[in-house]
Every structure is written in structure tokens, then in C-alpha cells.
Image (cartoon, rainbow, N blue to C red; front, side):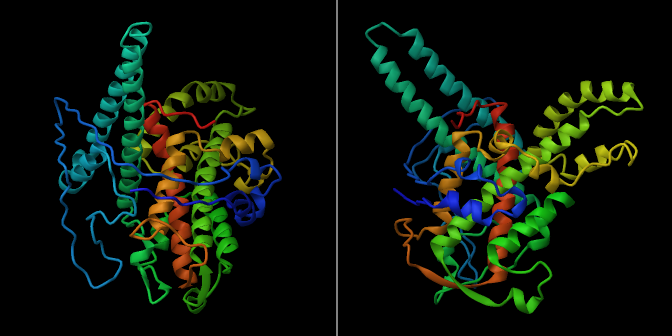
Length: 404
């Protein structure tokens, strides 16, 4: 199945929708100029001593019936993007039937994929100059593409698992949630989606939400349920820009925390030395735990509270971000891997495209409430934050492709 979802105006929209604290003349060069996604059916077969994955020609799932038109129709996970690789389908089964083994299975799959890819590349180099060089080069190309698709499915399942931990289902394909030209997403899950962020990050997110949907932060319930018309393509661009903003905020906030942890307190050089030596190891350990669900964002706050409030009093995150030069802004906002870029493209396409061919018409206009738009934006920001965590973790086991 081919699916094209172009967001050619994303750079300008990203600049327009981001809060004033991160607006800059440098931003248009940071975000990708367009999103074009193509899906293809591929499969991967492998086995290990701990898990054995069986690949069948069709994955049979049972969808629970419900009164809402947003209920799942073909996937019991009810995600916009359905895993296509054997690794993704296997993790879907583990999530549904053996959730407690999910992270073990993820690590196992990543190691298998890394071994499969590296093995094929190694054979390609070993056969260089031989009669079989062309064959091994072609096999290596196919294996690299196959493993990239599979690892994107693994990353997607990790993000989905993070949403399940806060009891927030991903919004399904919007084509299933639009009835008589009106889109409503229920329940809103605003509190759960905001709970994953620190206070300073949340302050910037709320400003972003107000900017992109045009609703005041202190608006009443009546205002939130007021309706407005919006082009579905425009809503898709807002969603994609919000994913990038969530990714940017996670990168910037952790950079902010790192700089303060490595700052030198004037009164106690021994504490300073100890902090500088210990932090890199604790950060590396924390990235893994962040994805595996053993830590929350609150740990960074509690870690800072171990020192006196006066010593660790830091500037607001907004002020810190406003001080970024062009290079720092680019580093924090740019997606580090091609897999992350592809994942955003595929997820956006699956969410906003139709069920038949995945295409989105430029003139499709829907009626929706500000509450539903806020739900989409908060989910997108959380998706970007979880994507940053997932990308860091996966890259420690399966070397991702750098996004140049």
C-alpha cells in the first residue's frame, strides 16, 4: 500500500505556531521542507533462545465492538499506524498477551536486527572483488532497508507503550472519528498528557497550545467546547509541528539540566568535582530507564533538590531557550535519525489520511471543537517527547542512521 502525505509548508507553519520564546530566523532551516511517506510490505524472520517469533502470512486480531465510530476496526491496538514488519507484529502480540515481558522482547528484537544487518554488511565487504560481490551487495541493501523498517516499528511500539503507561490511547485514524463532517475526540486526557512534563516545560507547552489553536489558557469549559472550522491538511501540519516541538523541548530541557548539573558551585569544589564525574554515568543509565518506565521526568527535579535551593536556583527554561544561538537551536530541534523522520511521516500519514488510499485532500474542511484540537496537540507534543527518549534508547543497541 502506497501512502503519500506531503507537508510542504511545514517550515513556515512551524515558525508561525511555535511560542515567541523559540521563534527565530534560524528555524526555517531546522525543520524538514516536506513529508513524503511510502509504505511497503516487508517481512523479517529470526529466532532466539529466549523468544521465538513465528511469521505468518496474516496477523489475526480481534477488535472489540463499541458504540463509538472511533472504535477499532482492524487492529486491537487501535493505533493509526499498524506495524508491518515481523518484529512489529511480534511486539504487538507480546504487548497484548505478555505485557510484563515487553521490554525484554524489545531488547531482544533490537539485538537480532542489529546482528542481521551487520552480518549482511560484513559479508558484502568480505566478498568485495569476488564473483559474488554484486549479489552480496544487493542482499546487504535489501537487509539494511528491511531492518530499518523493522526498527521503526519497534520504535513505534515503544512510543505506544509509553502512552499506555499513562493510560492514554493514541487517537485512531481521524477518518474513523469524523461523523457528518465533525471531529470529536473523547475523552480529552489533558491531565494525563500534561503529567509527563516538568513544570517549566509544561508552561511552554501550554503557551504553544494557546498559540496553535487560538484558545486562552484560562478559557472556560464552554469556550473549550465551542466549535470552529479547519482544513484537515492544516490540522495535520499543526500536529506534525507539535511533534517536532515536543522533541525540541525534550532536547532543550535535558541540555538545560545537564549544564546546571555540570555547573561549578563556588563554595564547594569537591561537590563540583563529584557531580562532573558522576553525571555522565547517571545520564546514560537514566536514558535506558526512561524508556523502560523505571524513571519519570520528576527525577530530574528531585536530583536538583539534593543541593540547596540557593545553589541550584536556575533561570527559567524560556529564558534559557531564548539565549540559544543558531547552532544550538539547530542541534536541539533537528531530528537526529532518519528513522525518527520516517516515523513522524508515517504516523502523520496514517492519522490524517483516509482508510482507502491514505491520501489527504487539500480542501477537506471539518468542524471540530477547541477541546479536540487541544487533545491532538497535547498528544503530538507527548509523541515528540517519547520519540526523543525512544531514539536515544534504541540507538544504544541498534545504530540508527544519522539524519543529515
